[in-house]
Length: 344
Image (tube, rainbow, N blue to C red):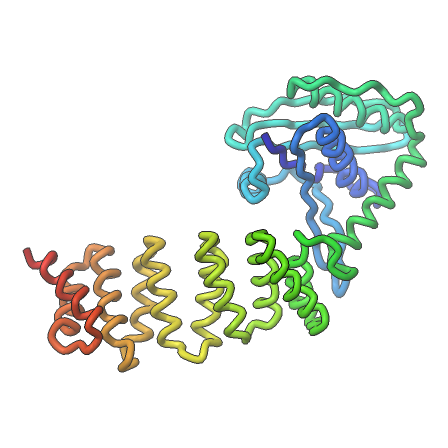
């Protein structure tokens, strides 16, 4: 079981509410991990001018956002919540559910005086662990007063912003690609940083940490969008890992920056056809039919795409042209085989 722990909803009547809404769930996630559970806190950042800032959630998250983020984290369960802290009172609400049954959560609500926020978070952790069949921890003998706890949460918030926002050198392997995407958005291409990540890609490949290598390699390709060789490596590694989103991105980029655009259109068309997206594939093959060296392949695959859409009559026209006057022996053979099937 893996639990995706989302930033909590809050009412932002001062700057600290966002800190509580981000760091209280992270403390709960740490407590769940201490109990032997796989809890993954999610971090969301937004750009403000030339700076990055944390996201503050002030309304219930849409279901599709929760499901998509949980799926990205490969989480079977989600933990959502709401927190609001004032001097007079601190309120905490938790929603734990299976991702597949998001509308049927286990719900826990409680409040304490504001100065007892540390104990309130402990209460929430105990309730979560009890619900999950784990033994809750003992209450802290010396709970932190609100000011001390708040200072610790603010420090954690700032540290997370520095580390996760890519404001320092690459400190976390799993975030290398995020830093590179940020660099591209800011127009801050640092060749020395590129070399660092290239070295890491080679190291991850040697260690068989292929998904990390693909993330960083895709980030490099985005950072240097006209570099055909890097996009080609993304395609090769992405196909090996069946990472179809990255493969499609790379192939589409190559139809713009590649040295052989007709061939890139054919490659993208074949990919789309394999993904059962025949209508999109037709558009790609049509881009290549006027290239003499690729006409046979483009027309043969164009026929296959049209046939997949139920337009067999149009498909036969393309196959007949290849079968009668084509020079690519492999495509001629495929076209004749398809004609034989279609004309039975």
